[in-house]
Image 1 (cartoon, rainbow, N blue to C red):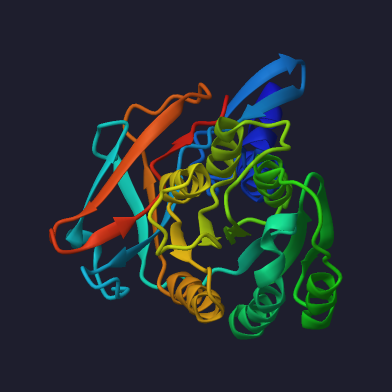
Image 2: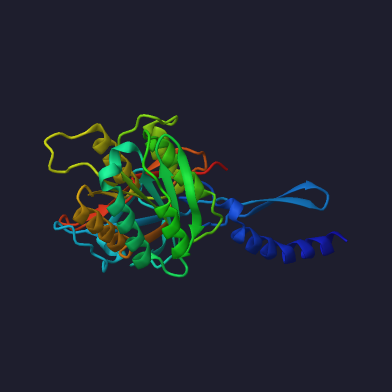
Length: 324
């Protein structure tokens, strides 16, 4: 009888392994999207087993630009140097040029009173961006924020619905920037789909005067969701002063692997959206197993550099390991 039970268990083990590999509940914190299966079975009662798997594969999305800001998309793995928590990875699982994974885009539009003069052409540029970037497998959401955060349209690939959501936004009130970023990151994290690229596009002047969250909350939420933040700054880049809002948005974009782009004038807004479009079409995807990985919830730094000193890698600076 015992021998039969053992044979039955050996038959079921690969079935459970396949099942667990598809289970979206195992994808914790967003930034660890794929799984390396160190599967163990523990008998908790006669005939009952607890299966446990560790998620220890990191997915890095990144772009590379030259000294003129031109995207470089034909590099190979040998062109890069990677450290995870100051250690070389134990193993590189895969490397892709120009990743074609489906996009999940959160468009955050500042609708506080300070953006009134530029709001109409921001709406026009956003509509054009969606027309160019969204493929049938891609989806986007529209979020407006002043002192409140409002989900105008949840994830969809229907351009008419996205256009309507953008058109319905109205300018008024103060600015809850950090709350909006936290909301968008959490919303993207709630998606159970695996193997997608998440991105936040933020249009704002960066001034925050009405949030419950603080800047660190916004940065952590984006890092945990594994989403870069591309900022379209509505500040005047030609002004002689560097605002606090500009500093905040630069920190949020750089630390998450995104970019901050000038979008004060009408031509700049359209150009900034084109730059984001190019970035999303030029992304690399690197998957690896970290050395000495522990599923303890701690922050692990990431340093990815190009061996060519004339090239700059735009990549998030770290991630939070899931808790076992």
